[in-house]
Image (tube, rainbow, N blue to C red; front, side, top):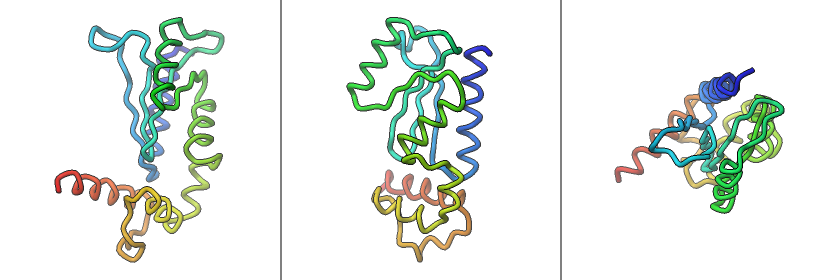
Length: 152
């Protein structure tokens, strides 16, 4: 498997999570004259958390400049990891973001758990105002509310 194949798998997985209602966004960092050398391959944000992910083929190691950038991002407070498989990426997200729960577990807990999580982040409305039948629609409503708040 090539590194680009792993990156594509992770991006596809993130898009699937978005379709299932998880508020997550992924950005591929392309190496060019405008990007800092050694910057990790992917920047992922979910639930106000920042993740930088360096993808490597099994057996390969990050270069010295990549290791330097990883340490710089960690010092800035981001979660940074080197992954060699989709499973390692899923483990990173589950462990750091969802405290070991799978996305399926989170969705199975229903809207009440999602609303409580959002209240903790100070982004939710009262449960009776949600009146939304699915987690994906709830996520869309959250995005719209965030956009409205930005323009107030």
